[in-house]
Length: 320
Figure (cartoon, one colour):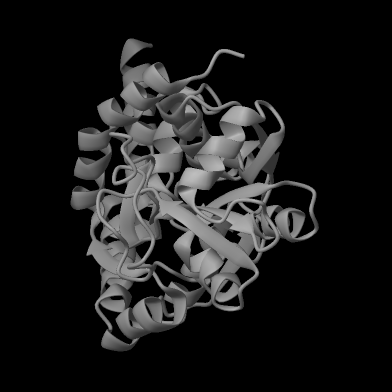
């Protein structure tokens, strides 16, 4: 009886291994679904759509927008999907880390999932409408201190952008009301419609409206001034010794995806990332710094920065 059970166990393992090898051997045989855990039209959506134009899987790639829950709905959709390479996630490494630290994602999700690549760095900036009574960061902070709780700051989700709002409130000692939207498109519309007074969104999302004069940038969340907005100061330059949660854009696969499939996906994405025309489009047309981080480099970035984001949450959470 014991020998039969052992034989059944060995056969089961063999079937799993054989099945995994078969999946990897002829991958891909059908379209690949890429889940974006944000609404259509925002930076998190447009960055992956643009990249996929330069990536050749030998099969089509289909974008599925699944906004809500501070990106947790889309993340968990991919996390719980079959690990065969046909369902991928386009999400920021910072967003994954912060979401887990804030208990919006189950513990271990970020370390379990397999990073495929990071495609670009798209840092956030703090903007106001053209009719705002403050046109500089100094004027804004003076107004905010004189009018505690009256200024609404909007952005997408409750992860990295939310932490950036907390950083502004805590470092400058101002009381703002954070309003969460399920996409950057909706948060921009809310500002332009007068439903909120200030906005935190990525540089790429703001450039066109800034050029048109509809938005006024007050400062950027980065260690140095952005090459896309060289006249806009950093929060650090203004006297607040902080940077913020930066915008990195990445692609992930579920835990258990065969290594051969991961290698195939990484190679396909890296070829696209190193395409000179892709780099030109990101830089010139979208205002995003293109990068080409592979799986190992992305994993290292997560490991190196998790403690930093935890420290931000611990130090800057405002008790209201």
